[in-house]
Length: 96
Image 1 (cartoon, rainbow, N blue to C red):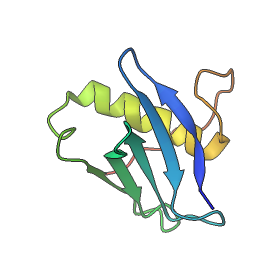
Image 2: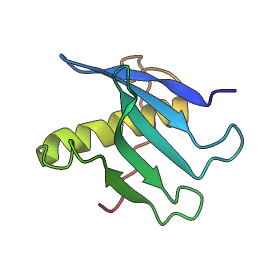
Image 3: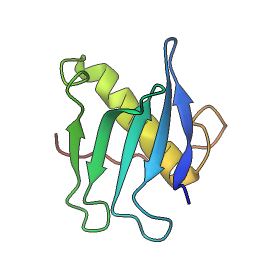
Image 4: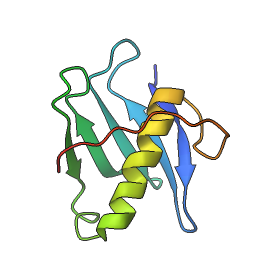
């Protein structure tokens, strides 16, 4: 059983958000590509002690791009749909 929550995209890639479990997940991953390259892991969701861990290739990307990825991923995670749909959603930020 997959715990995929949905996707979002930029001009180059499609990113998939996968929850750690179907019920009360404590983390999620953002993946891209056929090889499921890990872009971002957000952990500590249930404890409110969230931490962002970036995949090796993505660590050097600009801060504004990272904020966009985090915001888009949270919207997909909580709403289980693409962020392009009209819904104000909830924004959450994490350390890292």
